[in-house]
Image 1 (spheres, rainbow, N blue to C red):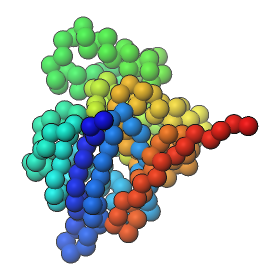
Image 2: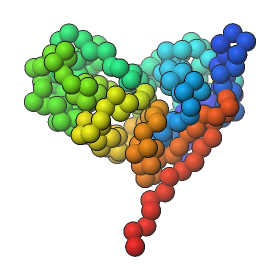
Image 3: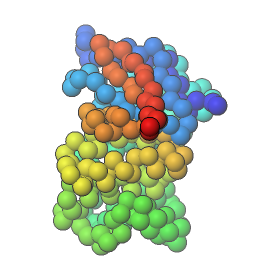
Image 4: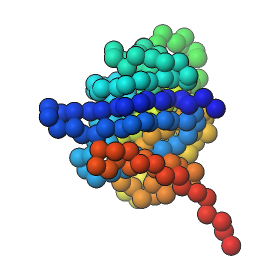
Length: 225
């Protein structure tokens, strides 16, 4: 199968310091990845580069087999890649309007937008919050709204930066439970995290930043005796 995204020689420098130098980054279609590494190794920076929010040096890049220039960041990738910040920014409108914001910006007809927002709220378990304001939401509720706002855009690649870092208990578990269904819907997902339960999810590939390099390892489903 044609890779979703293929990048050769991806390098990021801060002045004279080289944060990372990645020979090759290949993401498969409909696959799930966890991005790990010590604090300061560049996990969030890598996600932001993939989302076009930060610049980097790139030797060659292709998206679904089509070679693209990395600078300026291609419009095709802007439409296909969605980034969810560790602390999602919410607009001072209702939950439903927050989730539908991206669709409205794309000019989607109201009837279709309402239908997709409803489906996204049901998926995230926030239908009962449709008229609520962001200031009234808990951390877990905000994270689920942010995931719904991303999912409703049907991205080819979804980038999640530490989605469970500020959550515990049921809130954390409810967010983790949503991750596998994103790939089931056809999106590829990269989750930057330290969460052991996310890292150990079956059929998830682990990408580890270490000493400026990227290492990959595939999780397997364990047989039950």
